[in-house]
Length: 326
Image (cartoon, rainbow, N blue to C red; front, side, top):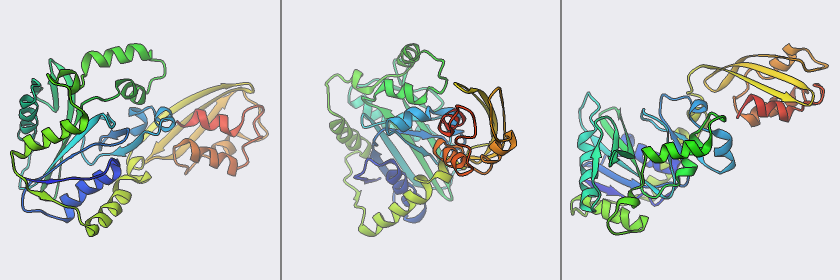
């Protein structure tokens, strides 16, 4: 096994590095990565971002959003958590988790943590989840990656992934706390995150000192892949499945109800109803939205570009945009 230090807490760079050593630079043995990121929401390959995250909260708190190349559910991670990746070139037709999870469990047991595999894709301690795992295949390469809650901000995890605004936050946090746990809470001897990382890497590498140093040439290409495949609006939102959404706003000037069809992150059809007053027809308001990215800033820009601001009595384009998109 060959260990690579990413030297980055930027999720786009780290996924770019993972992709680079999966597709473009083949090393002679299994590649192992152990890394962490600033606060980030990692959305599964087949998920609808808008249904999985609290985007206004994520935007307000500087939480990055990325779409993984693997399936599975959305996870929240921050500098109190760790990610691990195994990159292995071999023929395999089926998804198989246990062989990649086993060394992680063994490493944790050596640290005195009684970790277990739940049989699907999670790792648990006393029945509480602390790790989610995902896997995908590119050409002849298998990539297995997973998350480890070490000392993660559980409150922020809940707030950034609670889409339904009617949920009571305190109850949501209690529910999550009943189902998940941080590894730090179970260590017999307290340790800092970096010390934990050092121990985990040493145990998983089995005493091997095989290390690959990222070259300046590697770094240039990794940054290109990060921008092309991960830090990219089309990749994050453009692959959303088609969905319909209905939003209602009650303003000083009356009620506006929007029904919107979105495909690949772009508004394809819109209609508006309500008891509002306007100098424009409903079709003109809706036409401004067609072809617009389904995100608040883009919606606001489109409404203003079509002179909607000021055309609706006591309802601004800003207020409409806040209702239409998160």
